[in-house]
Length: 86
Image (cartoon, rainbow, N blue to C red; front, side, top):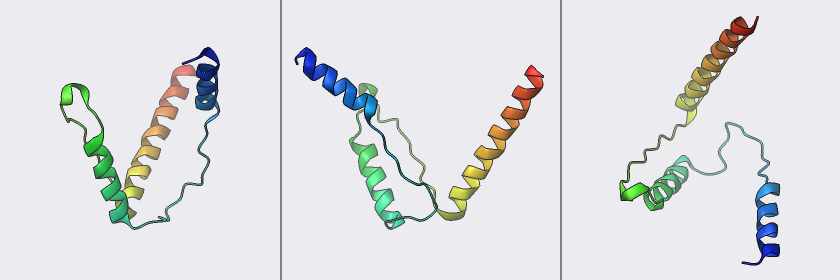
């Protein structure tokens, strides 16, 4: 690969952006997402072919519960951080 090609490739990596709105509405059926995720997991290489990857796919109330827990834990961490520095 030429130096110019390498620079162009690096610029493409640096400038790549995925801009989209996140929300609770799915543009496809949940089973289509599960099927896609299973296929990706099955065909993704693993170190020494250990096949140790695991995946959890959540929809609806379970999905919201996970985000509620994450939000609660990060808020708790932020409070601890403030106590440390105040």
